Length: 80
Image (cartoon, rainbow, N blue to C red; front, side, top):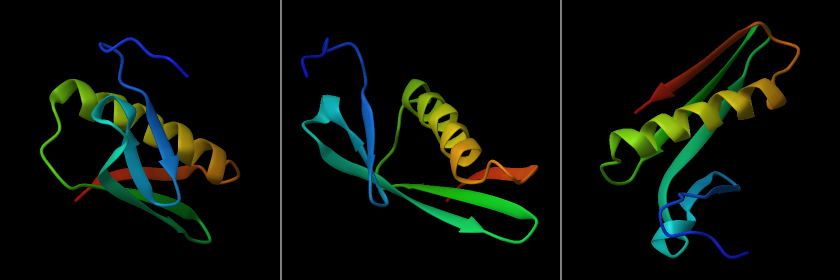
């Protein structure tokens, strides 16, 4: 897949957050906790992320939660 250098393409693989723009290096991890009534996705960056990248990751984290815990109303994204 060819991408414009100005575009950040993220891929989740296992529990690692990859940013394609940075040659596929691991830039963080995520952990999903599913409870009976709630779900929490914790994102742990391994380095400082720009505001733009952090905002984009936040949106995708909410999308992942909506998919993984569609039946739960109480969903939260946390950063560590």
